[in-house]
Amino acid sequence: MSVVAPAHSEPLIRNDETMRYRPFGKTGWQVSALSFGCMRLQDNPELNKELVSTAIDLGVNYFESTRYYLGGTCQHRTAPGLEGKTAGVIVSGKERINPDQTAYLFRKEIERQLEILGLSHFKFFQVGWFHWGNMPHLLKQGGVLDAIRQAKAEGLIQCVGFTGHDSPENFIKCIETGLFDSLTVPYNLINRSYEPTIKRAGQLGVGVVAMCPVAGGVLACESSRLKEALQMDLPTTEMALRFVLSNPDVSTACSGMNTMEQLQQNVRTAREFDPAEQGDFGAMCEGLDRLRAELGDKFCTGCRYCMPCPEGVDIPRHMDLYRQWKAFGLEESVKQNVQRMPEAKSLTRCTKCGACIQACPNDLQVPDMLDELSRLAGL
Ligand code: SF4
Ligand code: SF4
Image 1 (cartoon, helix red, strand yellow):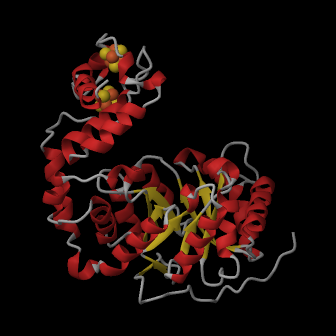
Image 2 (tube, rainbow, N blue to C red; image 1 turned 90 degrees about the vertical axis):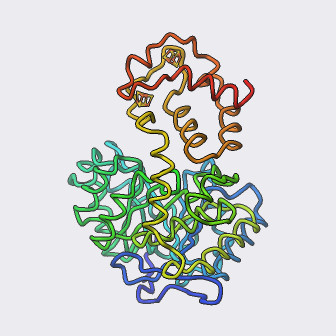
């Protein structure tokens, strides 16, 4: 692949009539409050092109993509909408890291993703599926960091972030290495586990891309409990986006969108919501903490000591749904998720053997809770 000298000094695009902008860590860039997750684009080339192109027109300047999503078509679905519009827009690519990854393979993947997307360089490239245990594979001679350094020297990538699902503590260790300009982690009203990591990122000047701001659609259903806790009488999706953007250490809320209605609604929220005037982050957190406190200490911490269930029931997943229902009042989405659970992991397989109760450090009466979920879902 021929290396084209990138225009590194160009500022990111902005449209102040329709979007707000926030500092992206120490990069010096102002990134749009709403960013576009391309992993939910549908198999509809015309719609995808219009969505991506319209998002840029509306001032969205960060698009998150990787070749692997959507059966390997994510970047193919993204590229047409970018045509002629990539100047001043971050389109991040992503490649995995594992024990077999080498500098040569990582470099090949950077080139491959650039080609699919029609880009001369990546303003941002992400080390994907990252966790602390992968650090040796990043640092080893002939490993990923060598590829990143070489690609940076040649102008193929400018900044580097990572994304993954390690513990908040381990991700703090990752950003404290000083090797990364950003991290991408799930963060929303019902999953605040990375809040300490996000805070540390803010202290270190590491950019934060908050993914799943509406919890993969879970927060699309109405909840009077959340309205009360957050003191907002708004649709849940709008409250969800406002909550994420109220956190001053979040650089951008990255929402996976695949309809024009979602895009326009999210852009409207990002534009209308002024965190300085309307975003009392501390009060929102207190409201959410109160909801959780109502469950007392009887909630699942996701430790997985109860797994594997001898019958195959996905206990932590069901306990998480139980929490979403009881703490946040998300009855309708919980009902649907219980109904859609694959048969091999479904609560219907529970024989009430009690092994999970013995294993649970929080003394959760799992079979009784599964019964409650079963009645809710009409199973
Ligand atoms: S009680 Fe049910 S969920 Fe718990 S371990 Fe036994 S079969 Fe699995
Ligand atoms: S052992 Fe208890 S707290 Fe841990 S994942 Fe299982 S149900 Fe949740």
